[in-house]
Image (cartoon, rainbow, N blue to C red; front, top):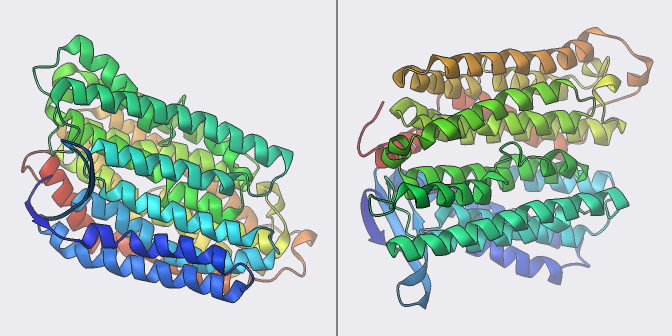
Length: 495
């Protein structure tokens, strides 16, 4: 998978804390403080293990461990390469803050089934890190499906008829995608004799184009549903009926990030940029992503429910990653991978703000937020910084992603995609600016008596908001990882 491969237990150890928490949480059902302590301790331990592998991965050292060999030549393998460490570090780092936030949220709203809630959260992060460190498609598929099953109870958590229906829709989409991914994995094993992830891809001239196109179609379906590529996106806005920390988990840490991470794995480590370009398939993938970017932003403009607005924004933003990698240029690939991180940190901030507003006021609609910035200045101030950053304004991290992505389009000589990103930025401003202006410059009697949410909600959103700015001015390790992953995928070419 690029670089020096070293046998080590690191990738396997990264799974232990969240798996241990998933085992201990149900045993502590009658001791809420202990149950929450397991969640917090496990999140910190998992983040520490993952972050310990980041320097080596950025330098090209790949840690590998084989869990079990299901059959001769068919192992379950974990590998901590640069790309995997991007996703694993993002997921485990944000889990720490999401755990603190979740404690404040479920306590503030007196949520039911809190043991199930924290159990599923832990299992989801176990699966997300497994997806990040999967060394082949079979391992990826296994953890990908565990993630689906672990997040279903979270989507349907409220157990209202609407929540149950949303959960069923979520399962229908994601399990269908899982079937497509399994079929593509089995077909690939038959065609080339391996399902290992290799930088630059494993498909070659031995596979005829007539076979490659349907195989690529199965892969796009398999990972495109969780990545919310249109028209496979409909489950995501519906799933916003879930509690806000779950929405944050879906968008920033686990499900949709696993989907778009899967797109990068398939394009960069299964198909490969050279074959993607030779087939002309890069153009089909790129224009599908470009259409999703614009359509998602336009749909966000029409939303009054704040979480649905953020959901359609995610639909748009995820395709930045797909388009950047599909371009196959050094800056495009770096920008796409870096945007996994930048979007994750920024979008979780926006969802944290939405949850804090709901806990403090019970309000969920954009039209109800007039004057709220005067009563919740910290929450809405952080919301403004994150929203403008997501639109690509400096110094927040969204600007850095778009800078690389636009450079990538120029390197490819693809001016239309530059216009797509610029149009998307203007649309981002069109649906975020009215919220900010209304919150700070309009008055409303409904905001009277409102105060900031409790510290367990406020501190995490301030930290993630600050991180979104810090990643823009000092991207550090994450940019090093993105550059190393691009180096591997493109065969040593760096921007």
